[in-house]
Image 1 (cartoon, one colour):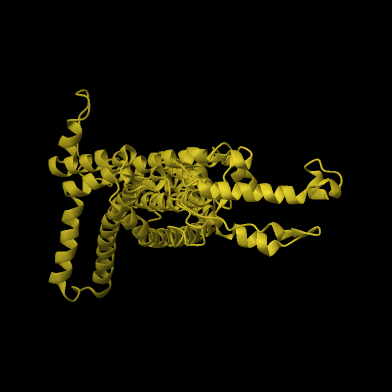
Image 2 (image 1 turned 120 degrees about the horizontal axis):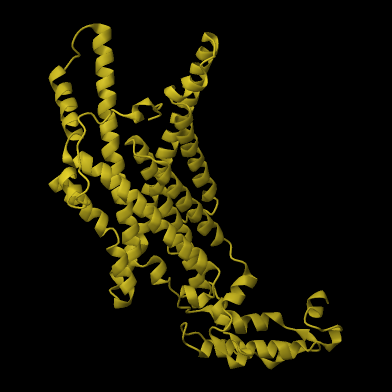
Length: 440
C-alpha cells in the first residue's frame, strides 16, 4: 500500500494490476521493435497469465526475459577514444623517462659519496677503480651536458602542462556526470556504466604520473610552491571525478535518460532497453577504485609536509629564530630533525614506489581497450577530438628537442626578449637553495 499511495492510489482494490502489466508488455514489445540499440524479440504473453485474481509471474518472466538480448552499446569516443588513450600513454612515458633520468643522476651522487667514504675509511683505492671511475665520470659528464639541462626544463614544463591537462579533463568529466546521458554520448545504462568505468580508470591514469612528476621535480630541486599547488588541484579533481562516477544512483540515472529513446507505447518515456545492462565484463578488467582519492590525498600530505618543513627549518632561518637555545636543546632539535627527515624520506620513497607500480599496472590494463579500438578500423573512432588529443604533447616534446639540440642558453635566447640575457652559472649548487635542508 505504501508503494501504491505514492502514485495517488489509496485503496488496493482500485489498482488495475492486469492493465498495468499489459501496458508494460506493450512497452517491452515496442522497445524490441525499435532496433536503434540492437535487435531482440519478446515472447508471447499468454492471456491466461492472469486468472482468478492470480498472476502467473513465470509466464510474465518468460515473455520479458529476451528484452535485453542483443543490446548494442559502446563507450563515448570523446571520453576514452584511441587518441585519448594514446595521450595518456604518452604522458606516462614522458614522466617515467624524466623520473629515470634524474634517478640516474641521483645514483651518481650516491656513488660519489660512497666512494669518498670508503676511500677515507680504508685510505686506499677501491677494488676495480677503472670500472668505477669510468662509470662515475660518465654520469658526471652526463649531468653537465645540454641533455641534462634541457631535461630539467622539459620536466618542469611537462609537469605544468600535464597538471593543466588533467585539470581540464577532470572538470569535463565531473561536468558530464551531472548532465543528461546524451551529453556523455550514452545510449543506454550499459554504455553509461562503461563511460563511468572509463572516467574512473582515466582519473587514476592521469593522477599517478603527476605524483611521480612532483617527486622528480623535488629530486631535481625544481619543486616550487607553484608546481605543488598545481599538483594538488589536479589530484583533488581526479579524486572527485573518480568518486563522482562510482555507484550511480538508479533514480538519478533515470532522470539522465529522460527525453531520450522515447516511445509512444511507453507513454513518452524511454525505451525499456535503455535500462538494460549486459552480463559481461567491462572494457577494463580493472578500474581504479573511487577510494583512491584517499591515496592521492595521502601522497599530497607527504609532499606538502616535506616542502613546508624544508622551508621553515633551513639552517639559516632556524638559527635566526632560536638564538637563545641551549646546547642540549640544540642537540634535541638535531635528533628531532633527523627523525623527521628520515620519516619523510621513507614516506616519499613509498609514494614513489606506489606511483610507479600503479603506472605500470595502468599501462597493462589500458593495452586491451586500446588494441580493441585500433583494430576496429572504423573512421568514427578517429574524430577531430582524437586527432587533437594525440598532438597535445607535441609542443612540449618539440621544445625539449630544440633545447637539447641547440643548448639551453641559445634555445632560451631565441625565445626571450632582447632585454634579457641567458648566463650559465659555473656552479649550479650555489645560491640560497644550498641552505635548505635536503630530504632527497
